[in-house]
Length: 411
Image (cartoon, rainbow, N blue to C red; front, side, top):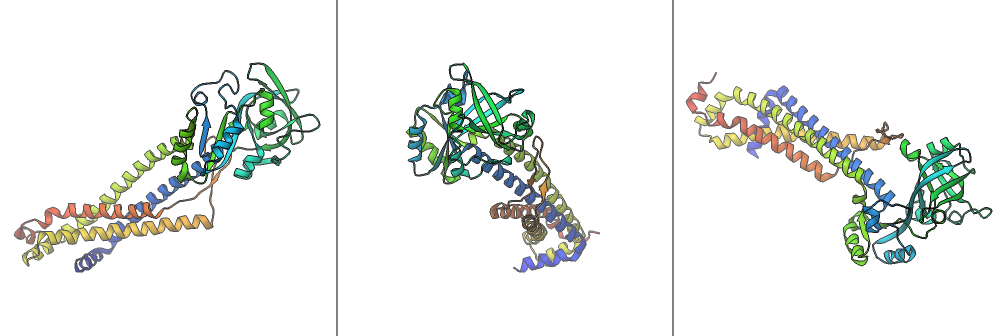
């Protein structure tokens, strides 16, 4: 404790230089924590979006995941209802949602446009997720009559992407026709009524995306199969164990985790790791250089003082420890101030939201948030303090071992 007090008094001898070193260390630490917190928020947001869209686990045939289909549902799942019941029997499973994926044309009678369609069970989707689409016009299916179709003409409901609806001049209550090849390669049609217009936030996707009820999609494709079954669990911590357990129970099928379905998530994560890894390295070098420069100046100015202390019997190791403690105070103090600043900014963003502009390829922005976990914050502060301590010890090592006569004669 005495040596720490001694080091603190020495730091205050040149306050301007010490404050500059502390300020730069604080700025670097805050920048590193804010960047890391933004990355963590991005990972968490992408994770939530991916799981909400695909489920924690996806069950399908091996051919569905590995091969292209010549006709819709070629590699689909048979007897989906029985398979759903088997999956739902697992204690970790909360919901099992069937999906039918297909493509084709949608026509208003005068104009046709290509579509990427998704047949789903509206009632099950609403129970699992609540309102799961951003409806900009019209309404979501109520989950009751939606799957049964319109009693008057058997028309199924559809939700259109905003750009697709604009292209077809379609609005809620309007009538369209879906055209697609069935499981035998024959062209079939299905009359549909427009229930609403949705926006995915991705203009390219809005030009082709269409949602319809599961039974309508199966009627159009002439098959009772489904493409996949999405499994929703109680939480992310159950994914690995549930995947292994369900895969053992379904040896003829493939149970994939949400991460295996999230190519975009993995790409963003890898990119951010590289960007913020380089950023952290640069900030670490800056902190080391600044603290080392401050300590080098202090050591040079106090060379005769160091020689005097040596002459009075102070050991080189004791002097090196005292000078390293000065670096610890500079680096640790700056890192703590930077951590406080980062936490303050994170809290302020919760109170005063800041909206970020839309990223490339999207039409809507997102709120700026910083997720700061205690452990990464603590690790960052300790790392900055350690780097500063090592830098101080490095620049002082020669001076404290300099011969006493030579140190006393230093000008």
